[in-house]
Structure formats: C-alpha cells, structure tokens
Image 1 (cartoon, rainbow, N blue to C red):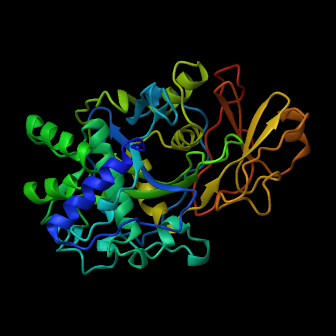
Image 2: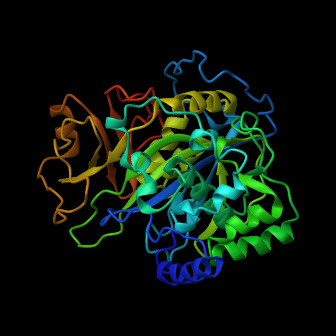
Length: 421
C-alpha cells in the first residue's frame, strides 16, 4: 500500500487534473478521519486448464452452500490462489503474504472512467448485479453515496477498479476486456489479458508512478477493467493493534475472481518481492509450519476456500453468494495469559458497541485467563486465536449472507484438520 508517496502522488494528480480541465474529487470520503479505504483481490486460477467450463447460469437460479467438507490435501484442488510477499521494508505487514490490493486513489473515482465505460455507464452500477442486502446492514464502504464527494463513479465500481489496478501494479496481471465486450460474458471464469509484455511493462511503470495513467492505459488499448469478473466476498477493518495514536488502519473491500489458467506474473521488487501460487490447503499448511507468514484476514479467507476443491464450484458459489452482500468485520483484540484473541462479530466476547469510527483513545483489554479457559466458558464463538503468528479459528455461529465456515485445523501443533464446531 502506497502510503509513503501518497502526498507526492496527490500533487501530481492535482496538476494533471488542472491540465485536463476536469473536475475531480479531492478526497473520496472526507468523513473517514481514522480509516483509509482499500480494496483487495482474491485471485484464483486453474492449475492445468481445468476451469474451461465457463458458467452461464441465470443469476436468479437456485444455488446451495456446499455441505461441510473435511480437510482435503492440495492434490485434490484443481486451482491455486495468488499470494504476494510484502517487502521487509513495508510499513504495514512487512514480510507477510497477502492478496493483491492497496489503497483507493482519487483516480479510481475519476469522472474520466465514464468515457471508458460509456457503453455500460447508463446501467445501474455499470451493469453489476444488484445486491439483495438491506441498506441498513450494508457496509458503509459500499453504501456511501460518492456523488456527495464529487464523483459519479459508484463505490462498487471504483473499489473493483482499485483492486484490478493494484493487481496490475503489484503482479503484472492485467484484468481487462475489450471496451465492446458484453457484460454477461465477462462475469464468469475469465482470462488475464495477453499482450506484448514489453508494452505492458512500460504501462505498469507509468501506473505505479501515477495511478491516473490506468485510465490512459485503458483508453489507448481500447479496453475496460473487468469489474464484472470480481465478486464481492467480504469487508475487513484493521483492528486496534497497539495503544499508539494514529495507527495505520484500513477499511478493505475483498473481491474474488477466477481465471482459467495461471497468468504470467512478475514482482515489482518494491512493495512485492515474491509471487506465489498455492492451493488453499497448501498455504494453510505452510503457515502452520512457520514457512509462510499470513495475516489474519488471509488465513481466515483461505480457510474458507478450503471448502471448494473445484474452481468451478468456487466460482459458482462466489458468483451467486455475492448477490447476498457481506458483513463488515472489525476484529477486537484481547490479550490473554497465553496469546491473543481477535474477537469477530457474533462472538460472546464481542463488545456491544465496538469503536467502529476509530475515534476513541486506542486501548487493548488484558486478562490473566488463558485462551482455552475463555473458550470453554463462552458458548458463542467467532474468533481467531494466535500466538507467534500461529493462528487457530474457532466458530460455531451461523455465517451471515450465505457465506461458509472455514475448514479448520484441529491443533496448533499438528497438521490434523478437523472442525471446531
């Protein structure tokens, strides 16, 4: 995430906007005093061309959540997920493997995108399917009316643009479609663009130096960000991790996208030092073996993906489930006698009124009780327990919006997988 160069970039964009004589938003959500908006992409790809059965289902068709799975080895999975190792010099989550993504930029909400999407702009949300979720429970990230901040680009569109742009910047993967492409053919298992690598490398450097160049890339190549292939998956808020004031905290939209085959990737050697494609259980096993460091959201979401050994089934689930919406999750940290607990909504220890705005003085409660003692005492569990970067998930509540439970490890000290319900 590009926080250290943010002021410099904003000056460059302001100068560019004045030159273009276009009215642009100065800051996408000025009400967010303590949060930085961001987008992340869970990018999956078939291992050996196993996902060529493109889905053309009616979005209104019936679908069901998968029956609960037992742990399956990586050999049972016909796809892998992209993980990027952040640089040791990163100010946020150094050395950690994360999904592609980063901060939303003003250019992601630029009115110039209206020209790029001109065939689809008259449609609500540029042709994205409407979410059924009641507005009263919709995460503010998606619910906020961006016209109040000077942008005609809906949040659902801009956050997808951000995720696609950041994926291109960090891994070199460009998820676009021709500007004459039909929406219905763009929203299923797809492909990354195949283009001259030297030309894409030049564009990548331009976009890294100024995100507004992503608009120019699409204009000159006659393409659009494939926003229809990105399906809403979740929304995570960075918890209070210390009692320091002015901590880096992010309000991040998570999307998921499925590719037929693994595309060419290349690290930028700035923010990202290594790209890895791993089957979901492989990533969890490496994390448990301390060979790969994951963040809590990545660990949780990859554990969810372990329900789906088939890319086709994962895509079908993510496509239909996205229409239900998602829940905004703010983990609340509790320090115990033998580790930490990140309580998630629905857990018995979760506060009635968490500090969603991040306006209160940062504080982390401490108890002299052990994690396992608290677990036995509480009947409703939805928590991530961790110690020295080893995570365990405990959940026995029903997930909202037709989502799935994670497939869980039985013990921190073994690789035997079992349900914690």
